[in-house]
Image (spheres, rainbow, N blue to C red):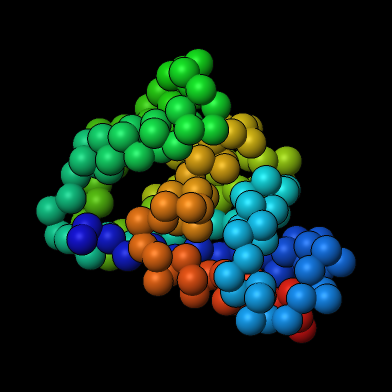
Length: 164
C-alpha cells in the first residue's frame, strides 16, 4: 500500500438527492447502487484525498498508476476515444513534484464537473470533464472500487447525510 484514501462529498450538494431517496430507510440506502450512480453522475462536489504512507514513492509511479487505473475507467465509460483526455490528466503530474511520506494529493470535482488536482495544497491544474471526474470517483466508490470497505463507509455516510 502506497497511500491511504478518503472520499469526501459536500453535504449541501449531496442533499440534491434527498427528494429521490428520502423515503428509503438508511439500511436500504447503504446498499443502494443507484445512490452511488447518482453521486457519480450528478454535479456534486466531491474530493478524493490520498495521503502517501510510503517514503520513497516517485511522482512517476503515481503518474503510471493513474494512467493505468484512470485509463481503464475512461475506456469503460467513454470508449476508445479518451487518450487525449487521459494524457491531459496525467501530464499534470510532472517530475518536479516530490512526494515525501505524508504528502497529500487531492483530486476534487468542483462545480460544473471541473476536476482540480493539487499536491500539498499547490494546484497542479484543472480539467473540465464529466467523464474524467466520473472515472476517478469510480475508482473509489464505483462498482469495483480499490477498497470495498472504504466504499461501504462512504455509502453509509452518504445515507446518513440524506436522512439528516
